Figure 1 (tube, rainbow, N blue to C red):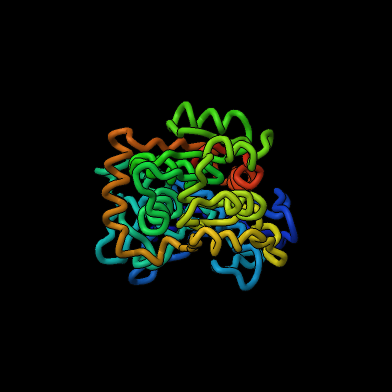
Figure 2 (figure 1 turned 90 degrees about the horizontal axis):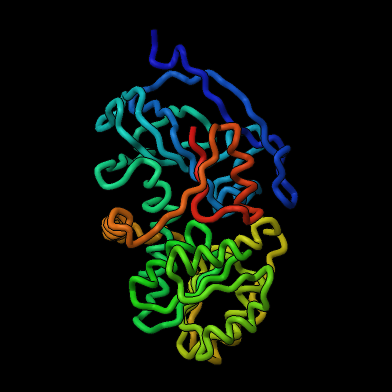
Length: 337
């Protein structure tokens, strides 16, 4: 009997291409046989799937990330365990992470995946606190782009989300005064009471511009933006001299990528001798070893807290994705298979 003969792959495929908001009926649960391994392949039993904002950008042609065609398994990063291997360096039982997709099993070249060191953190943490799209993205954005200095006022949007919550905590460790922008009293309480932020603004129930003036009367030195749109303009209008604006994402715009609302207050950059820089984490591969080492240390000694919201079962993938886009999460959303 072959390695895959008795296995059934459970998948979430894109049933139709969203035109605006993503809805549950854009997805469909399907089953399929697990293919045989070729030389160089590994078979992975997926254990965890990462829910990330970039997934939405794959639901259209010509996007920055690879498109998910209608009828295909939805692309997603994941972590799992090697069940069979025809690839050098990968053994049965090894934990690996990489482009798993929204499915329970994947057969692909071993070179597509990275071994997980489970001595430094459990498997799911390699998608959350140490994950490429989470902790690693936050570390790169703070350390390589924003570079907060002791005493700086550091503002982060989507601050209760996976990346924002880690970015704010790193800035605190670097000596900055941290203000988070998030939606709802539960999230702002999480930021100040659990993560130790110096202030928090509830954009759903407070006047963001007014509250920002109260909390940062001398202006914002570093802004780590995950939202774009109106929030970006409000903070641009309150930059301090020589401020740094780091563009990590723009979740407010991902469902309107054909008509993105750009910043109207960009002239503040010239007036305040400030700079605005976008980044993608994979452009900083040379920093990954240092980032992993620091994140693992902070994760294990409790210096950085990563709240995980777990959805159970592959069938829950669409619901988990919608939870992120409707702002129902605090911290990292994961699907446990």
